[in-house]
Length: 176
Image (cartoon, rainbow, N blue to C red; front, side, top):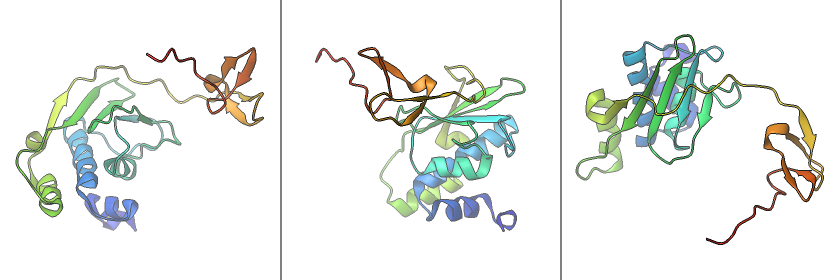
């Protein structure tokens, strides 16, 4: 079914509706394809580090094959409309950053602008300022000694001599 649709239509079907945020993700993928020659990632050959958790991330997932479950979609919560694409085989990376909008546009016009404007007009292209993330790993499960739920070992904290999950951990805060 997806093969007959345009990238925009695929993203809308996956996301559930059309919106300017989704258009940002579609165009960011288009930019990565043009600038890096990436294609759909069957495994982890392409990695995307997204700096936001907004609508555009759905386009990234459906059009690149990058996903949290496969470990090749990494969320780095800066809140910026920025997506960094890496190719594992070469280590090549490209950071695609949305430029600030000039002027006032309603939702419909903003979406149309994002879908039709030149890539150089809407994005800045930068060298990533962080390294290619390592491949996904399996971690042993530890049992939180407070709630008794399983937690991967890299998310365990030690508190009062006990292994605890992030939900049960009470962070030390000096109040500054």
